[in-house]
Amino acid sequence: MLRERARSAAILAPPILLALILGGPWIALVVAVAVVVGAVEAFRLLTAAGHASFPTLGVVLAVVIALGDSVRQMPGGSGLLLAGVGLVLVASAAITLPDPREGLATLMTTIFGALWVGLLGFVPRLAAVDAPVVNGTILGWLGGERAWVLILLLTVWTFDTAAYGVGRRFGQHHFIPHISPGKTVEGTVGGLLGAAIVCALLVAAVGRPAIAGLVLGLVIGLAAQVGDLAESMLKRAAGAKESGRLIPGHGGLLDRIDSFLFAAPVAFLYVVAVLG
Image (cartoon, rainbow, N blue to C red):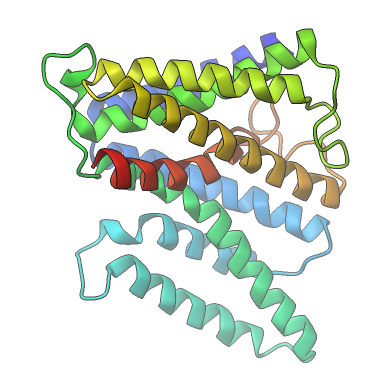
């Protein structure tokens, strides 16, 4: 299993790291591709779980939610405005269905799928946050545009890896077995400790207080765990083991970004409120 995860990382890491090196619009481009692929997989799972939707409209709306703020700024927020127009289009399609109950369910499912995957848009928003780093520190040369995204990525990856390793070695008590029988309390605690330590070191490496990084690591780890379990809940409802077959040894792309869907907005809020 660990070898399969390593192969998955070998496929995903190069484009992510390249985008971080180049910065700016390249981060948004990688996120846009991930949102499209992730949304396609999400709506496929929702359909398999018996929830009708408008997949094409949902994918487009997910991209709009994720990257709408990247267009020219408008009064009230360009992202909110474009998302509102998208919701109007989805509602317009829903009211054409002959059964009002089916129309309402389809509308709600489409909005949920788009909003859920669209949360990945907080990664480029995190790159644009006004939370300066200190020049001359170990990672200060990255600048805020890339440093906070790198911290998010490494913290989530640390949580996933530590939770898996500790759970496999020491796991005894199951954690929410009705959704994910393989997860254990010990694994979750190990993942949180690993995420907190790594995040504290990384935040200190950009010249900010290590204690703030310790708390940020715990927050990111908790959000990542919920994000992973949320996708597991959907897969169990759909009777699917994986979201797709895009990545050898680890299923679909959604299986790799599920933790980030909840961790990214939480990290963004923390950085803005505490470190900004």
